[in-house]
Image 1 (cartoon, one colour):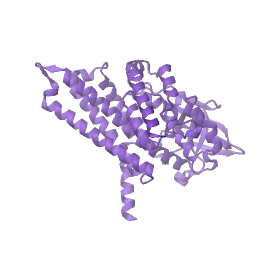
Image 2 (cartoon, rainbow, N blue to C red):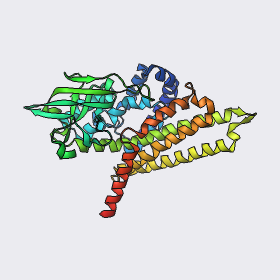
Image 3 (cartoon, rainbow, N blue to C red):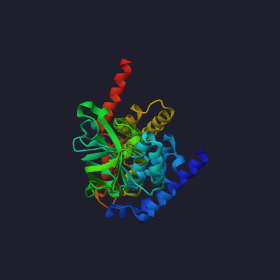
Length: 382
């Protein structure tokens, strides 16, 4: 995309977030739904396909462009991003990177237009950040596969039209090499989506359990047309998603800082604005400094990703730092607000709960530390 075109997209999204999404945050929190008007507006701007190839109707943003967009989107309720996040991210990227030409033509145009929702069905009761414990099975039966298993915490499952389902086609002893990925229509017999999970935060963004009971799919639903590519597909999608989440956290951190400064300047104790108190200033300055470092980190990680220099270690480092960073800033924001920060009608209370999830999904902080360390050790031994 030409720089002028991207600037126009960024400005349009920034205006939309400010005028439509932020004023609707309380409505989204109370109803646990994204209003149809916001969904329609997001689709018109191409947000359901910003990371999908232009030839399939997407915007085809680079990683450096995507993180800038994520920082704008991150300045409001995370449910807004979640609405179209799986189409662009972990689910859509499975098709982009590993799908056959026919599979891409079949699914990507509808995903980019927002006419279809894709969901990434990897996590299970015994397989979360580390998929080695995956138990869902896909058994070959002539020209079909029968898929049986249970998935947990699946984002956008209640709205999904198609699931990218990770299942074992080999023995458990085969490890990651025995995992494949399939496109499974949500309307097929044997697919059951449970009720939306009752989460701590991020209301309006839905997750649920999904059960597959001998769901019969044709062999052309095997992503890439070959068995054993599932683990690589999952890891590649997750690595890109981790950098996106890092950028999203910088956007939320900026919003939290803005809320904190506004409150500190306008609130008085003993006739003095609390912004004049040095201990409040210390919290504000620590938050600003961490946010500044996070933005620089994300920008460099995105540059390295686009250049093909680092698509593993830097995304994990960025996700680790930025998700931990936004939690610290959310905590300070509540502290600066004092008792008001604990009240439901205050934005920072909601964001405090929303931010906690970022350290868990798409690989916990602990998993990111392992990935980073393994890359360091491997480099030292080479």
